[in-house]
Image (cartoon, one colour):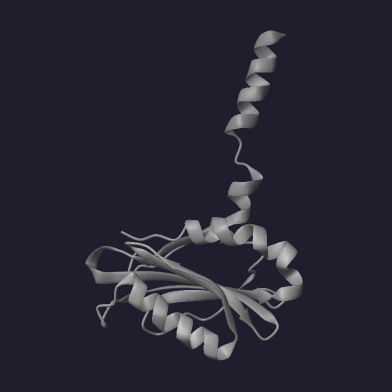
Length: 157
């Protein structure tokens, strides 16, 4: 009996979990940008841009997620990029959080009825890997808990 219990537990551990089935990892062929997110939330994949720099998804509740890569053609530091994005976002709404470190920049806030969160990671080959998540303020309880895990999954080579 003990052997069967062990095998039953082992079978459960080896089965693909719901978390793995419910998440999607996007990887960009052009820049190597990668991001993992809950697939069930962003069910509509938009047409990719012709230049192949990223992908966007939308949700029926008004949320959207974009992930893309691009060359750092202006040779900006994370702090300089953050200043530019913060100025643009402040003109559209309110920046409530902004921070940069050696190889990343983050800015979030509100714009009209929406909350936005952007993360930009500076990678190899002078590429900036980026993600932008936007969702209605009224759905903060649904999206606030997943912002961190999505943003922290952003990376590239």
